[in-house]
Length: 327
Image (cartoon, rainbow, N blue to C red; front, top):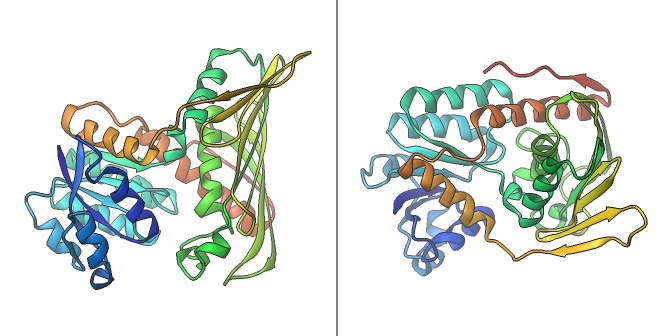
């Protein structure tokens, strides 16, 4: 059992606690840290989780072997570096950082200290995305030609007034909070980006923003792509890969459609999976058993570098070329 501290007990941090506390035999939280600790006593009691407001208190606890960061993005690097200096392994919720310079430094800090770094791209573990990845890799779609994606989640209506309203913490409209999942899916399914063109249309700025972020992608292997995220429309997810023989699309957490010529679409419904629990247990396995975390440091850095380029394209309304980040 990996004993960990969780830092940041907002909406998403609470989801992490609820996914493993009393549910997992591989990881548990023995400390919680949040600036609003006094307001979390009831939640903490329900989950047998001592809570404090002082990050240093958790770092100084020898029983804490790992730290899970679910904090503002600008805090990821200093908190990770402090945790590594204290000898802790680190799992960080996405994005790892808002720029490649910080991401590279964070990865190097973990390497130098011999600490495991895990990253929370939980959509990679959705059953539909796992199956889509296998379909793409199998070659059954033929020559890959294009990929489309969309992720919207009504965050502007449901979680307004948080970091999601801050251009510094959440650049690119809905890209940071939602669209980044599509960006990471594109990298995982197709490969590195060569060029991006962005369009961010703002009908109303925060609070309660009304904006649409759209991105055109040219991949290094010649495949084309496009994706969109809207902060004010109900939850919707789709990732659709097109080949010259067939196409397949994830249309939710555990639903997938396969399209072939002269045939009705085949709908595949997969058993649900607790993706948050799974990614934390994979992190625990990497810490305790030496099994590498399934997202490599090279992939982590590529996602942040690509994110940084897409933000630039959205903010300028222009095109940005990408080079592979130095390792």
